Amino acid sequence: MSKIIDGKALAKSLRQDIKSAVNEIKSEYNYTPALAVVLVGENPASKVYVNSKAKQTVECGMESFEFKLPADTSEQDVLAKVEELNNDPKVHGILVQLPLPKHINEEKIINAIAVEKDVDGFQIINSGQLATGTGSPLIACTPYGCLMMLQDKYGKDLSGLNAVVIGRSNIVGKPMAQLLLDANATITIVHSRTKNIEEITKQADIVVAAVGRPEMVKASWIKQGATIIDVGINRIEVDGKGKLVGDVDFADVEPVAGAITPVPGGVGPMTIAVLLHNSIVASCRQNNKPVPKILDRYNRF
Ligand code: GUN
Image (cartoon, rainbow, N blue to C red; front, side, top):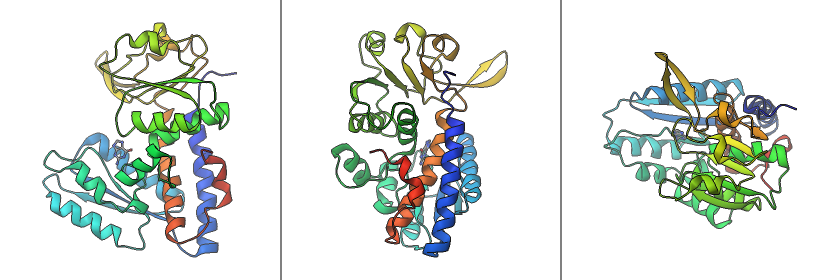
């Protein structure tokens, strides 16, 4: 059996199920789930993500609203746009693409998004509910996609497995650890101030790398047969040509790994598919309707 965890294929089947769910919602509930994306400025990577999100939203039968604002837009004007979308009943999910230009306080913008429309799961109530295991939060897309890949392999219950998360960001590291903990794995988070990272990762059955440092994780860090989830998307130059690599040195690690996600084609495609999934869930809650059953298999419990 291949060692490669095919995120692209899993994302495709999730998108197909989302498409069926959207059809059901349109015919039975009489509304069209809609996602609004706000991009401020000209960050090239952000532009690529936003275009890709819009394309996939439409391909799944959902409505996509895009707002591209100039880099010098004031914080007040971004807040006003968020407020307008919060109050628009046709909009079910709101995503403000990060990073924002330096003069805008990201925390302020994120927390201005209505909790029920925060399909990124970054807002304080959603992230707090995930941390405390209360309520039914919307969950950050990248870590949720990683969990789906792990649960696809192991089943829902990760009891008895040691998982090491490399990185402690609010976007990936922290919610990833919380999701793994809720799935009963035993968790360690390592980061830039950790001593002897390699000794710790070498104990892990599951390693999730989310640090943004190209090819940092080497074979010597990994226990034979471990599952490796590589969240990194780093652009490097090889022989004068641009190339995308992960936080894991794939060529070095693949021979010792039991299973591994490639870059590209691993975590990346899952993130957008989960964003669409979250938008469907958000839309059903806002319309007091049950989430179509076809999406039940992606529940984390
Ligand atoms: N920038 C990079 N990843 C993300 C993400 O998942 N959501 C948002 N809003 N911005 C990002």
